[in-house]
Each structure stands twice: as structure tokens, then as C-alpha cells.
Length: 133
Image 1 (cartoon, rainbow, N blue to C red):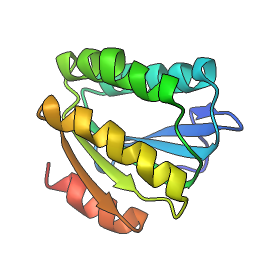
Image 2: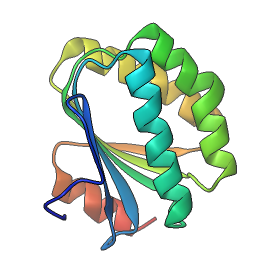
Image 3: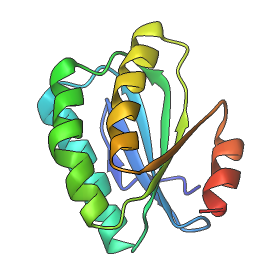
Image 4: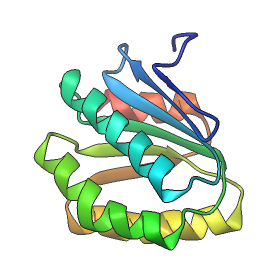
């Protein structure tokens, strides 16, 4: 992992992990829809730019994903991303119960689109799985 993030905001940090050809998103706290969508679209641009279909999503410090953000992912982002090569997410889970409930709802939409997703407790496990994709 590089020491500098390409996208570095209070609510989210994003980087490209060349060793596994994946985009890493590290969420922090709660994101209002404008900030959430900006970060997700930045990550999608990085996926396209690097011809990667893999995300490493670190939710350990994330709070609830708002209903509005969940709807936007389900109706807009996942479809656009899958058309542009996105195929798999390794998700590092949060201990926050509200985040867990949000992620469960989000996962249902990913499954409908045939996108792969696995949950992990740490970055190393997530990276190991992504290397197999």
C-alpha cells in the first residue's frame, strides 16, 4: 500500500493497489450523499483507468450507509460500474451494527447483478482473496 492516497477526504480515502490491481476505499464515519457519490465515482474512474474490476472496501471505521446512498448504489452505481468492468469486492467488515445492516442491504443488489463479494476481518485476508479474482 502506498503512503499517500490519491483521494483523501475526512470521510473517505482512496488508493490504487498495483500489487493486486484493485482500488482500495477506506470509509470513515458517515458520508452525506454528495460526498459518498463523489468518492464512489472517483473509485469507479480509477477502476476504469487501471483496467481493474476489483475493490477492497474497508468499512472498519464506517457508520451507517444512508438509505439515499444505498438506493443510489443499487439503482445507479453498481449498474454503471458492472458495465465498466467492475466484478468483485473484498469488504472488511465494521463492528458497527448499523453499518452491518446497511452492507447487508447493499450486498443483495450486488448479488442480483452477479457481482462477487466476500467479507473479511483484515486487509491481508481481503488482498489474498482479490489476488484470486
